[in-house]
Image (cartoon, rainbow, N blue to C red):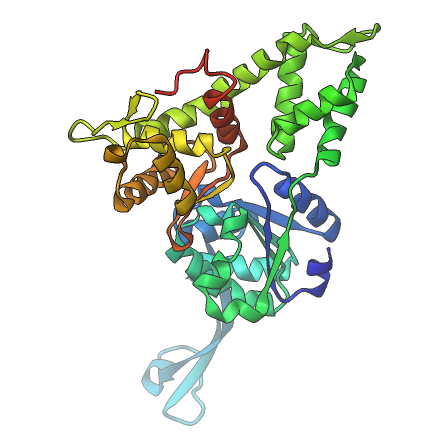
Length: 391
């Protein structure tokens, strides 16, 4: 609200995936006035971006300008003489005044139409998942928005934390017109409100210790905590509010985690583990415990054994691979980074929704943004090893 009040800046709001950024911004914007939301994941080009805005604001693709006036037609003296009752003044010719009207049609540039409509209607622009948009298109969009922002347009871009400075990177002149608003991760006390209020609403008895155990498995993500609570209730035979106080079946807790890991995290994990289509059979890497995996599986196993963590540096990953693999199976740096780059491409092109991970080459680090993937990797490599096959 303070950023909107100050104005004259492009506001970039960042926070963990599925942490409530969109809900928060829509709530604030609804109080501030008119607003529209553009989904970055649905933008295929710069032109597509502007067309979505003009569609949302019902801006016409063309407009017609009508002109009217008076036109004098000159008649020769001879022609005037042939008209009974007509006398030409001035001898040689005479003028006849008549009314004229014409229509001129103009095509409306989608970019210009969008910006003018946003400014005239005082409508704020919210772009969700701005980091989905291709970098070249980001630059063009930012350059076009810059002038409108100076005229008072309110712009909010939503992105994941490691993409917070993309707008300023693609357009250096924005440095003085850039406002970063970081939404912090949910604290355990905030997350605890989910099971406390939810179980209470269902008339379900749960201890503070059990609630904390649920929240500790949520990687600081409210949606994942909700999923755990929901699945835990189902596995305890609780489907609706009962007049009598009911208890959760504590023995069903790990089964609930297993189901969530398999349904929410495994499909993404499986695609990343498979890697790109290989033209030849991949070399297997031998682990110190005797098992063998290709480099994609080995990298994911190393990431899992490190936590897993939302952000892992290449050095930490390499150290863990050295800890797990025999010396002769250790991949070179270019092999590891090539695999991480391919995983990023798979995450972006082959997995529906927001890419679950990204190899940030400039930082030499792998960022895992999807809490369900982190959740699967944690449980698949440890507590659920008897029911989940890693290889």
